[in-house]
View (cartoon, rainbow, N blue to C red):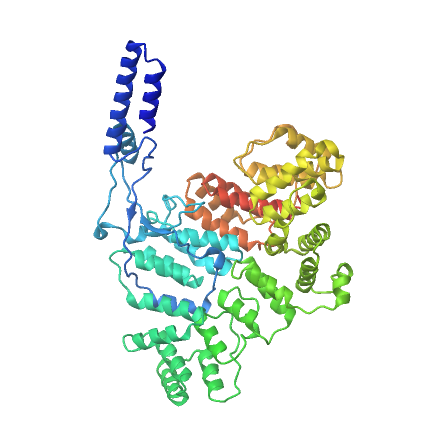
Length: 638
């Protein structure tokens, strides 16, 4: 229609010139034929070419590692709302094509393409994955050049080291990603099964089920049932769990189903039969789960509540305690198991301060929402005097209680200026006490209530740092742009802009280094902290791929040339560099997680994280590199 309208306009514009009319009509007619031909071939003029063949997988039952998952359930980490499988995910697998580049060239030249659909029988289950359609996709080549033995070793360490929402999200992304499996195993489906086991140890049962059901040719209904049961126990959906237990107890000798059957029998009120079954199980296995023993004793009216020293618990064990009205044992206070953390948060038998500390840990891992943590903060009772004198009160309170007090003060302030002052005070306190990212998340709705206007220029540093901490890059840039417009009106605004520039630069690794602002920032630094701050900034910028002029480095040579810092071990550093140079994406991600969380996310050292930032960036994990660089920069005080 657009083509026809253009033709009509041309005809009526110069009607008296027959020659031009004839030529124009011919050209338009040819153009219309080309358009129609393109549509007939299945393409519009603007239609994109497929970058690579993708094979869609029909979900099916799969895998066989029930016994290993049962053993892992005694040492498991629960719910991660921030990293749960999204509804727009698709099940995919990549088929390796030797001539994919020439194929793409031929497709471009011919104006058509061929979608290769493989049969389910020919697909390699180890390369199956569940791929998100959102940002930050993992390359299909993540295991190129990887050795299976080393990958398995790195994977096995994940459940014990993952401490933050960022590393948990990356670990899950790696485990779920489709791609050709590492070299080193001839057992079909073994790598897929191992990924399922690791996901189950992280208590990501839904994700594990997605992988299991997507694999063609691998059927293990018992494993699928066990994962479903554990997910139901995690959600404290006992009817569903017990229904599964009844279905499977007589079909397998797995002790897991025997224990769940005993538990469900006791729940139904048949305590005597449950105790008899437990005694029989103890005789045949020479052992009985201490959680089950305490549950049965409590249900029978006994007073034995001593589970003994344990360092972890799985969702089934936590569900038994909850059903008996018991709190988790104190020995689990340092656990990072999602089920354990939730149990402590819901428990009424620990101090309020301890509950807040655990809730903050869970929020930092993305296991509970900021809204849930805010609700816990609001439920803390403070006197009117404490609320009125929060600046002095927080000095004598435990850190978590102090943050709760400052949060309640913020909610009380209705006037915009007073509201902003209260937010800035809370953020400053959390920066000093090591919980800036968590506080930034919980205060995000409050910060968003204040618009980036000149009236609130004084609030810009707090707003920008907090917004960047939670990944609200565009909102932070709006605040920074407002400050830039106010530079000519106030030297103070110019100082704010220069002071915050490093964070704005770091927030976008794709952005070219602003040499003029670097010079301004360099000139504005005070002598006292110059060496440490300048070294940190140049190091972070270098790790993000920016070329730093030598004159900056030369100036730092007047300071100590040898410094003592915490850094990754020689083995970790050597392997990370090798993986990076060979573009072994999966191994870079896994080793990076181990290095980051070994240093503890709240105390990360510059020298520990810089190699990881550089490696992440160079293998294509750009979002992760930027996020990590921002965390380090904020930790350094920028």
